[in-house]
Length: 281
Image (cartoon, rainbow, N blue to C red; front, side, top):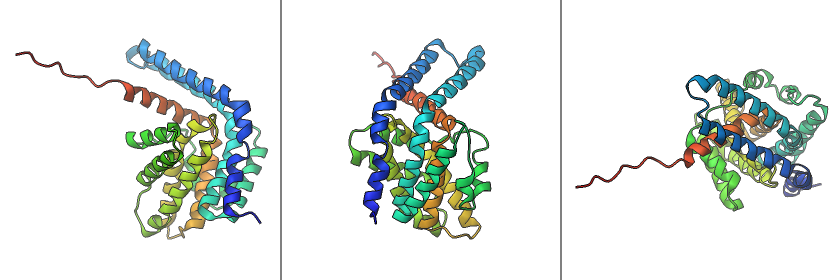
């Protein structure tokens, strides 16, 4: 029988070589092009005044294009990531079961925007979780949370990246009840391992920026469970976070929106703050 560490490495490395050879250059060039297009839009003043509607239309087109480019990568990494999260929080048995369900959904998916419900219904949260995905609105996180996730995707040090992941995860989770406080360390562990998994390949590194969305959706589901008096423990947390990991990473539109918004925020952050000229005597 495989121990937890061995299974964890299998989840992390299963498609690493494939990502490196098949998708890395294509994905990175596409992502860089999206940043470049955004920069050109800023230079031309798009998004302001009479050009606002044109900019929104162009942005929607770019989101769709990026989503289509992301789909092959997401379809492969989503079940791996879901299994890794399940292992980190619930242990090897939970990770194996959740990963198997996620892989089955990935195999059965025929449309690049198909949102399956079997994963959630398996754990009796279909209604609550599906409603969060009816519209592709990406949660607007505070600037610090997004900055931490961006840093986690870019730094060279694995330890530093995991530190950033723990920091933004702890910042997102509302400590509203003893049950939520009890599972918070487990959610942080899941977020850290998910960060490590996505950083394994250059083609999936940018996806670290999507983890705050997964954590936010996970915490909201667990808070609802706690308010209803239903159990919230590591086993439940593993199911919920693995389900949201599968759901978010299987949705190219959600991922593309997050990456493009992060890119736009990054460009804003790089702009120098205006300085006051020294007054001459």
